[in-house]
Image (cartoon, rainbow, N blue to C red):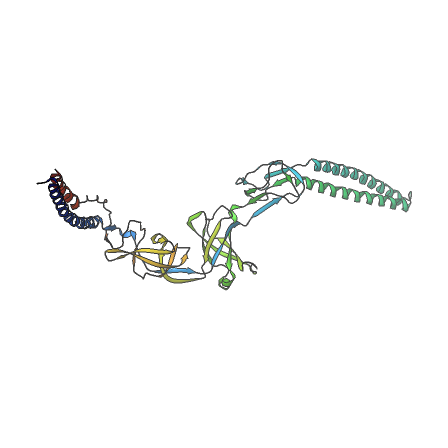
Length: 406
């Protein structure tokens, strides 16, 4: 047989072998998909849930009323300012330090004022001597006039000199008091017990008249200074309970009562200021924190869901509901939030009696089986995947191809 014909037969035989191997591969691919599905189904473990991990949805009392926003501010606070122009010599307290009433906080330079005090003291001393001398002269002339040894005119002249000396003494004492008062103003002292909230100056600064030097506040006098929309002003009453949250205290639900309602709304924001006193001993010790809550004007019944049972995905909210022995992901519409209980009003998607997971995680699957138990067993070890049929088919074809090629 010629060499060309022999090569043609070998090529035809190889083509036949490849065609026969391709058909088992296609069948092996289908078997591989079935095996992967079986492995996935075998790995889907039933979710074991303890009774305390389930929330049964039901109606509860919901505090409905106007929303109030504002900040926490102390009722007793003092902005201590310079009452004269001088240089700051020393600052004795830092921010956050406790102070007692009368404690020295800031000292200003009193060099010029000391000279004024000394001059005023000397003027008082001289005026006092002049008045004493005029008083003695008047009393002597008054005695002589009574004995007929002096004229009435001399006695009256002595009385006038005595009165003028007395006026000079009073004026000198007034100047002395003013000078001493100016000297006292160089010492900035705490007006009440509290803490330093803001130190504005340092030694060497020039304190102009009216310059803010230091702030003192009483942390025990905190209150909630809030704002309420004027549209809902008719719902406000003195003594109403307010539930609110304060930034920096996420785990604490504060409660207070309305003490005062402003009689004029802000012309720009159209909001009414409301002062709320804290109820109980628990209150934040830091001023200026943002606070938001709700006035309990009325109480209504509604379906409520806890925040930790919600799953957020963008603007949507979901819960994991247990239907029989299956777990389903359900979209829920939320209403207002009750700050007192930390619950959301359910506006749609759920009904009374639905059972929800309290703390869902990202590994849950829609339609997953649920088993209730009081004790959680250890997690099962993952099953090993079965060997692929396509791999064994390909290995069966390789010896045949090698033998043909040989």
